[in-house]
Length: 136
Image (cartoon, rainbow, N blue to C red; front, side, top):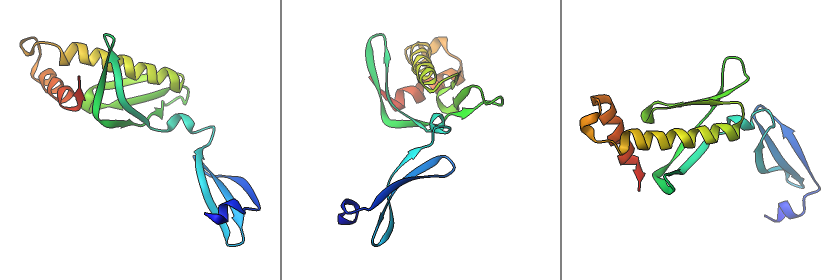
């Protein structure tokens, strides 16, 4: 750690998708931290741990990592997660986060809380999966 405190200089070295904060010392270069480049920051995974439904916070038992991608036009961001029936798109990362949260709330209402007699076999499977990964 003393190498980092006696560093002579720090520079950002751009690479595809990631920039490295490096420090030059008497022993060579050391990577201090990384950060996404401006162009690819929107493609970093979301870490979903909870969402709000009807004023209550519902939590995932394990964090859900979802990675967005650009659509064919490179204008919008889109994200799909078939296991939970998530399929959203938006212009910005913030809008995409809001869409994910809204879709999770709808899925909870329409499947997890619905009586199984009103659901198809595929919907029952989705309901059971939702109930297995989310705590009330």
